[in-house]
Image (cartoon, rainbow, N blue to C red; front, side, top):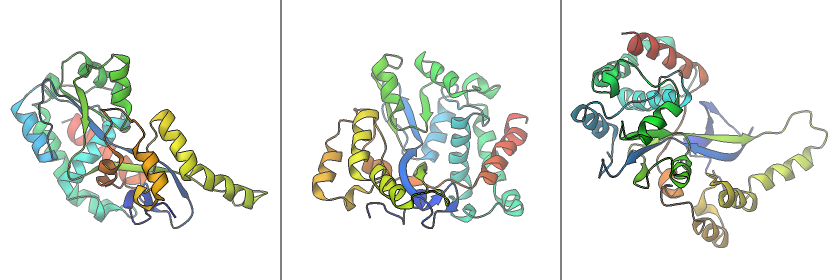
Length: 271
């Protein structure tokens, strides 16, 4: 009752319609990090980011698509280049892929010479990107965890001037789910457990202790629960839940993701 099943990033589990087979348990969303000491105003859109990259050569890069976060960034850029994910939420279509996705490779090749190290190489892992950001060699970082930058600021790895943002056009989001095995010996007890884990009490506890990003729609909660969620101190570097929720973009099915990663290697890395 507290989940917005019209929200695409919840209604589709990496491109597959949930259709009541799963119960939303947790959310994750791609966010960008930046150093406000060097970038006073982060870009509102990917178009603005592209302009910034090209006018500030050497100050931006992203991990290779062989890395989980690098792959997510490539998909984010592809969404911009191909006009959004809506035409690609179904089964993989090679003909459609070959027709539409070259615009993505053109975009990524266009900015390559303006990247860190002149685009001659890419960080192989997100850890390498984070080290470049922490040492001041680049001005942006990225994560599929909205609270991870706050953790690195708290630990002293990042400067206190580091902060996060999302694009107005939205960023990739996905949801983790709970499902019940068809042959469970006690379906009723499983339903009780699932409802508890996905309900406001357990979700609030996780939000308070581990900076959990709940999939619950706060506007659907009773007032007392909504106020308790809104009162949780998430840290000044963590974007508010309503800001994140209003900018979610759905993920594609696995075959699309694999095809994008492989095509990035062929059409960007090896070019």
